[in-house]
Amino acid sequence: MKTEKKIYGAFILNLFFAIFEFIGGVFTGSIAIISDAIHDLGDATSIGVSFFLEKKSKQKPNEKYTYGYARFSVLGGLITTLILIVGSLFVIYNAVNRFLHPVLIHYNGMLFIAAVGFIVNLVAALITHGGNSLNQKAVNLHMLEDVLGWIFVFIGAIIMRFTDFSVIDPILSICVALFVLFHACKNLKEVLNLFLLRTPKELNLAELKNHLLEINGVLDVHHIHLSSLDGENMLASLHIVTKEYLPEVKFKVKEELREHGICHATVEMETTNENCIEKECAVCEMIKNASHCHHHH
Image (cartoon, rainbow, N blue to C red; front, top):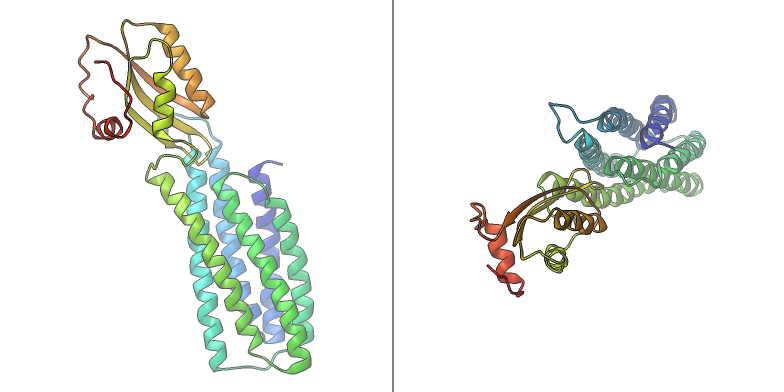
């Protein structure tokens, strides 16, 4: 199933459930459920945004976006992750408030809502599981968090029903919120690395350079830049120095890059008697000092 269809399925489920939950929360008097309804409405909104951006990310490149729209999916991941972080902090704030002002709760209603919530979110979590788009990962994290939350609410409601120990309600919501906060921050770091054009973690610059230098006819490699569009598609641009211009060398270089998972490479060929203007780029200097292989100039 396509990523965007999965996200759309999760969106519809979440939206209807948030409305059901809000009514249920008012009926049972459980602020845990009401605050979860608000959180779910936030979820549905961010999933809606994700869906729209994921769809957009599949569009073909044009003159406005020559790289295509792959980054839009990452933007969806960013928005969803930020909503998750704000939502978690909001839940923690509510829970702390709850310690100070405990209230009476209809436990039976809470049990029923928790059971429905668990089923709905489990379905949504299964639908969105197993994508490698950062956007889908963020949406899936939302769903998993909700499944966990409902298991907690359910157990909590049972315990409170038999013991009247009502602080369990806020304690549980804090545990779930912290779990989500931790994972959302990890997700955020991945997204920011993409926007900051960090070298993809699958690639090792020095190793790649050594592989390229082993190609017959390649005398030097410099001005290497590696980045990723969306966490899946990797880009590279580099300069290759050869004795004379040999098209087959360029072909071999591109083949080597493809083996490293780089689908989009810009290779500039230079001969030894050319003086490269960009030769002294800071990155190249750094690599030259770091890798102790001979360079023939």
